Amino acid sequence: MEFKFDRDVNHDFLVNAKVAIIVGYFYQDIGDKLLAAAHETLAKYGINENNVNVFYAPGAFEIPLLAKRLAGQKTAGENLYDGIVTLGAVIKGETPHDVYVCNECSKGVAEVSYQYEIPTTFGVLTTLDMDQTIGRAGGYKGNKGEEATMAMIEMLYLMKQADSQAF
Image 1: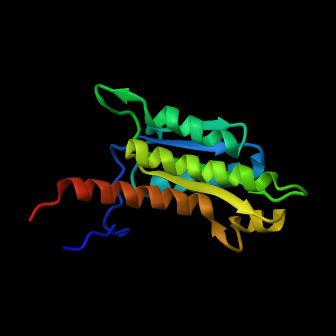
Image 2 (image 1 turned 180 degrees about the horizontal axis):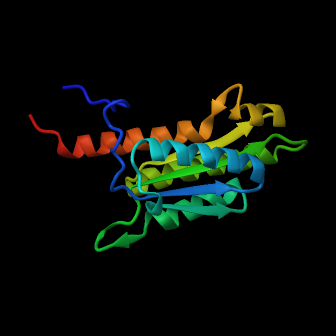
Protein backbone atom coordinates (compact mmCIF):
# COMPACT_ATOMS: atom_id res chain seq x y z
CA MET A 1 0.00 0.00 0.00
CA GLU A 2 1.18 3.55 -0.69
CA PHE A 3 0.87 6.35 1.84
CA LYS A 4 0.91 9.92 0.56
CA PHE A 5 -0.95 13.05 1.61
CA ASP A 6 -3.52 14.02 -1.02
CA ARG A 7 -3.76 17.82 -0.98
CA ASP A 8 -7.04 17.84 -2.90
CA VAL A 9 -8.94 15.36 -0.74
CA ASN A 10 -7.75 16.40 2.74
CA HIS A 11 -9.16 19.94 2.92
CA ASP A 12 -10.46 19.27 6.46
CA PHE A 13 -7.53 17.19 7.70
CA LEU A 14 -6.62 19.66 10.47
CA VAL A 15 -10.14 20.25 11.78
CA ASN A 16 -9.23 18.89 15.26
CA ALA A 17 -5.49 19.60 15.20
CA LYS A 18 -3.62 21.87 17.57
CA VAL A 19 -0.54 23.56 16.18
CA ALA A 20 2.16 25.82 17.59
CA ILE A 21 4.05 28.23 15.40
CA ILE A 22 7.30 29.68 16.67
CA VAL A 23 8.59 32.80 14.95
CA GLY A 24 12.08 34.13 15.51
CA TYR A 25 11.42 37.87 15.36
CA PHE A 26 14.95 39.20 14.90
CA TYR A 27 13.85 40.08 11.36
CA GLN A 28 10.25 40.86 12.25
CA ASP A 29 9.07 41.85 8.76
CA ILE A 30 10.36 38.54 7.36
CA GLY A 31 8.82 36.59 10.24
CA ASP A 32 5.48 38.29 9.62
CA LYS A 33 5.49 37.23 5.95
CA LEU A 34 6.41 33.63 6.81
CA LEU A 35 3.73 33.56 9.52
CA ALA A 36 1.02 34.86 7.20
CA ALA A 37 1.77 32.06 4.74
CA ALA A 38 1.73 29.49 7.56
CA HIS A 39 -1.71 30.69 8.71
CA GLU A 40 -3.07 30.56 5.15
CA THR A 41 -1.77 27.03 4.69
CA LEU A 42 -3.29 25.80 7.95
CA ALA A 43 -6.62 27.37 7.00
CA LYS A 44 -6.63 25.51 3.66
CA TYR A 45 -6.74 22.25 5.60
CA GLY A 46 -9.52 23.20 7.98
CA ILE A 47 -7.77 24.18 11.19
CA ASN A 48 -9.79 26.06 13.78
CA GLU A 49 -7.88 29.34 14.20
CA ASN A 50 -8.39 29.01 17.98
CA ASN A 51 -6.23 25.87 17.82
CA VAL A 52 -3.17 27.74 16.60
CA ASN A 53 -0.85 29.37 19.11
CA VAL A 54 1.92 31.68 17.93
CA PHE A 55 5.04 32.20 20.02
CA TYR A 56 7.69 34.82 19.28
CA ALA A 57 11.29 33.91 20.13
CA PRO A 58 13.96 36.63 20.16
CA GLY A 59 15.89 34.90 17.38
CA ALA A 60 16.60 31.61 15.66
CA PHE A 61 19.00 30.38 18.33
CA GLU A 62 16.20 30.44 20.92
CA ILE A 63 13.66 28.57 18.80
CA PRO A 64 14.68 24.98 19.75
CA LEU A 65 14.32 25.54 23.49
CA LEU A 66 10.84 26.95 23.05
CA ALA A 67 9.96 24.10 20.67
CA LYS A 68 11.15 21.57 23.25
CA ARG A 69 9.05 23.17 25.98
CA LEU A 70 5.94 23.16 23.78
CA ALA A 71 6.51 19.60 22.56
CA GLY A 72 6.70 18.39 26.15
CA GLN A 73 3.36 19.86 27.19
CA LYS A 74 0.53 17.43 27.81
CA THR A 75 -3.17 17.67 28.48
CA ALA A 76 -5.09 14.64 29.77
CA GLY A 77 -2.03 12.48 29.04
CA GLU A 78 -1.91 13.51 25.36
CA ASN A 79 0.45 15.89 23.62
CA LEU A 80 -0.97 19.41 23.72
CA TYR A 81 0.29 20.07 20.19
CA ASP A 82 -0.04 17.81 17.17
CA GLY A 83 2.58 19.75 15.23
CA ILE A 84 5.04 22.62 15.54
CA VAL A 85 6.24 24.93 12.78
CA THR A 86 9.37 27.02 13.28
CA LEU A 87 9.92 30.18 11.25
CA GLY A 88 12.51 32.91 11.07
CA ALA A 89 15.65 34.04 9.29
CA VAL A 90 19.40 34.01 9.75
CA ILE A 91 21.33 36.11 7.27
CA LYS A 92 25.07 35.82 6.78
CA GLY A 93 27.01 38.76 8.13
CA GLU A 94 30.64 39.78 8.41
CA THR A 95 31.49 37.05 10.95
CA PRO A 96 30.73 33.30 11.06
CA HIS A 97 28.03 33.94 13.69
CA ASP A 98 25.34 32.80 11.25
CA VAL A 99 26.94 29.36 10.92
CA TYR A 100 26.73 28.70 14.66
CA VAL A 101 23.17 29.97 14.92
CA CYS A 102 21.98 27.98 11.89
CA ASN A 103 23.65 24.77 13.05
CA GLU A 104 22.25 24.93 16.55
CA CYS A 105 18.79 25.95 15.42
CA SER A 106 18.46 23.21 12.80
CA LYS A 107 19.95 20.55 15.07
CA GLY A 108 17.72 21.61 17.97
CA VAL A 109 14.54 21.57 15.90
CA ALA A 110 15.38 18.11 14.56
CA GLU A 111 16.06 16.83 18.09
CA VAL A 112 12.66 18.03 19.27
CA SER A 113 10.96 16.20 16.44
CA TYR A 114 12.87 12.98 17.17
CA GLN A 115 12.60 13.14 20.96
CA TYR A 116 8.89 13.92 21.14
CA GLU A 117 7.73 12.32 17.88
CA ILE A 118 5.79 15.47 17.04
CA PRO A 119 6.21 16.82 13.51
CA THR A 120 8.39 19.87 14.11
CA THR A 121 9.44 21.53 10.88
CA PHE A 122 12.27 23.89 10.03
CA GLY A 123 11.12 27.03 8.26
CA VAL A 124 14.06 29.18 9.28
CA LEU A 125 15.63 30.85 6.28
CA THR A 126 19.42 30.55 6.13
CA THR A 127 20.45 33.01 3.47
CA LEU A 128 23.46 34.96 2.29
CA ASP A 129 21.78 38.36 1.97
CA MET A 130 18.52 40.23 2.36
CA ASP A 131 17.56 39.80 -1.31
CA GLN A 132 17.64 36.00 -0.93
CA THR A 133 15.68 36.30 2.30
CA ILE A 134 12.95 38.43 0.74
CA GLY A 135 12.85 36.03 -2.20
CA ARG A 136 12.02 33.17 0.16
CA ALA A 137 9.47 35.09 2.22
CA GLY A 138 6.92 35.55 -0.54
CA GLY A 139 9.19 36.66 -3.36
CA TYR A 140 10.69 34.95 -6.39
CA LYS A 141 11.35 31.69 -4.49
CA GLY A 142 7.89 31.39 -2.98
CA ASN A 143 7.22 31.42 0.73
CA LYS A 144 9.07 28.97 2.95
CA GLY A 145 6.48 29.55 5.69
CA GLU A 146 4.00 27.74 3.46
CA GLU A 147 6.50 24.99 2.69
CA ALA A 148 7.41 24.37 6.34
CA THR A 149 3.74 24.29 7.31
CA MET A 150 2.91 21.91 4.48
CA ALA A 151 5.77 19.63 5.57
CA MET A 152 4.34 19.56 9.13
CA ILE A 153 0.87 18.72 7.78
CA GLU A 154 2.18 15.93 5.57
CA MET A 155 4.29 14.49 8.38
CA LEU A 156 1.31 14.60 10.74
CA TYR A 157 -0.68 12.67 8.14
CA LEU A 158 2.11 10.12 7.61
CA MET A 159 2.59 9.61 11.37
CA LYS A 160 -1.12 8.87 11.73
CA GLN A 161 -0.96 6.48 8.79
CA ALA A 162 2.07 4.73 10.28
CA ASP A 163 0.20 4.30 13.59
CA SER A 164 -2.91 2.84 11.95
CA GLN A 165 -1.52 0.65 9.20
CA ALA A 166 -2.63 -2.95 9.01
CA PHE A 167 -2.12 -5.86 6.62
